[in-house]
Amino acid sequence: MSFPITNPALLRALTGRGYQDPTPVQEAVLQPEAADRDLLVSAQTGSGKTVAFGLAIAPTILGDNERLPTTLHPLVLVIAPTRELALQVHAELSWLYEFAGGRIVSCVGGMDARREARALSAGCHIVVGTPGRLQDHINRGNLHLNELEAVILDEADEMLDLGFKDELEFILGTAPESRRTLLFSATIAKEIAALARRYQQNALRIDTAGRNQPHADIEYRAIRVLGHELEAGLVNLLRLYETRALVFCATRDAVRHLHASLLARGFNAVSLSGELSQSERNAALDALRSGRAQICIATDVAARGLDLPELDLVIHAELPTNKATMLHRSGRTGRAGRKGICLLLVPPSKLRRAELFLGQANIEAIWQDPPTPAEIRARDQERLLDDPKLTQTPTEEELTLAQALLARQSPETIAAALIRIARAHLPEPAKVTILPPAPPPRSFREREQDSAPRPASTAYVPSNTPGAWFRMPIGRKHNADPKWMIPLICKAGNVTKQEIGAIKIFDKETKFEIASHMAEAFQASTANMKETEPKIEPTTAPTPGRTPYAGTPPAKRPPSDKPPYAAKSGKSGEQQRRRQNKKANSAF
Image (tube, rainbow, N blue to C red):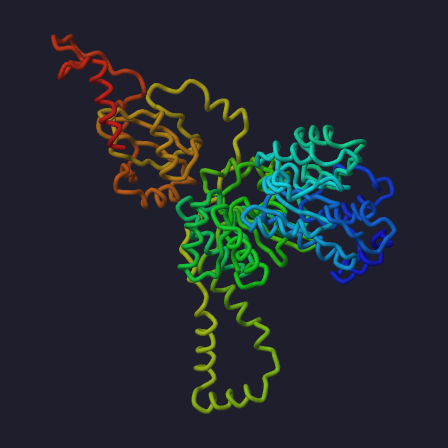
C-alpha cells in the first residue's frame, strides 16, 4: 500500500526519506472521513505520529496547490511538552514541507527569544513550540494567531502532567474558533477527553494503540541485582551488549553521579537532564544520534517523543514512578519497525513493584541475573573473532607492513598484540553477586494467614521455612522496637518485609531471621554498611527458653520510693523521658 495522497511535493519528500507504506496512524488520519475534521488520536509511541499530523493538515493549508501560499502570520501551530520534542517535530516538518516551500519556526525555552521573534516577524507557515514560550511570544505581540487554520497538540497527556493546563487554555482561547484542532496523545485519559470536549467540534476519535497490549518490537528483561550493586550490574550490561543505549535515572543528582562514574570507567557517555542548558541538551542528543557517544544517561525529560535512530537498548537504572512512564521510557527503542531491548534493574526491595508495573502493562519479561565478568569476556572474544576487519581484503600498503611485522615477530606474538589493542579501550567488567532464585509469589490466603495474631515470643511473623539468623547491637536498653527496626533491616539488606522472619529483642542485642533464599545476598549487602550505622552480622538462633522482649511491657518491678522518671534540673518526668528517647535514638 502506498500513501493515499496526490500532492507531488509531499510525495517527493516521503520518497526521499524512504517512506513506502504508511503506518496505521498515518493511514487512519488520511482516510476520507478524517478530512477537514478535528481529530482525537491515540497512538503507540514510535508509530510515526509527527508525519501523521503533518500529512493530516496538508489538505487544510495546501488544498490542491503544490506550494504553500505566501503569508506573514502562521497557518499552523504545533504545541509540544518538551524542548527536545518540539525541536524534533520542527526537524520532521521541515523535510516534509521542504518541496512545498514551507517555512517552519521553532519557539522553545532555553533558546534565544529575540532570534525567534525576528524569525516570526519575517513570516512563516508553521510554528512549533513549548507552551510557556508560545504564550510569552503571544503576550509580547511577536506571535499572531488570527490567520491560524489548525492547532496540533502533541503528547497532550504529558503537557497536562507537567502542569501546562493554563498555558494551553490561554493559547487555544486566543486561536480563531474556525480552526481545526488535532489532539495526539498516547492515552486518552479523563483530562484529555475533557480538553477535547471543550476545544474540539465534532472530533473524530482514532485509536490505533492496542489497549493493554505491549509494544511488539520491544523485548523486556528484568535483571535481579542487589541494591548496592546496581551500578556494577549496569556496567556489566553495557559491556555485554556494546550498543547504543539510553539509561534512565529518577533524579538529576542520580544522572550526574552515574554519568561521572561511567566516564571514569572509560565509557563514552553523555548526560541529559533539566539542569542543563538547551545547547548542552541538544549537543548530547546530537552526539548520541551521530554515534560520537555510545550511552546517554537521562531523566524522564528524554522519555517522551524523542526519535533516536539506531537506539537498540533502553535501561531503567531506577524504576519509574508509574506504568505510563515505564512504557514511554521503553518506547525510545523499537521504533519504526526496528527491534529493541528494554532492561529493568530490579533490586530485591523493588521486586513486587516491578512485578506490578509489568503486570499492569501486560508485559511478560524474562527474569535473569546480571552478566558475570566471565560471560562478558566470552562475548568480547566472539565479537573479536567476528570482527569484519578480519575478513576485509587488505591493501597493498597493509600487506607490506604485515610482512615486515612477520619478519620481526611470530604470528602468535602479533595476534596477542592485536588482542591487547582490541581490549585496551574496553572498560573492566564489575564483580556482581548472583542472587538465588526467588520464591513464587504467595497467595492471598497465605498472606492472610501471616496477618493472624502473632505468638508472644516473637515480634514479627516467622517464615514458613527456617531462615538464617543475624544480630545487631541494639536491644531493649536502646528502646529497640520492631516498628523502626524493620525499615532499617529492609534498607540495610535490600530485602522486603515479607523476607524478614522472627525478631527477638534482648537487653543489649536483637536477633532476627532472614528467609534462607535471601540470606547470602543480605549478608553481602550489610557488609558495606557505614561505620555510623549499627553493625549487622550472622549469628546463631536464640537459645530456647531465653525470653526476649516481645513488644509487651516488661513485668512490674517491686515498689520503690523513687519515681520511675525522676525529674532533673527542674524538668518534668515527661520531658526527661523524651530526652532519654531522643538520646537513645540518636545512636542509630
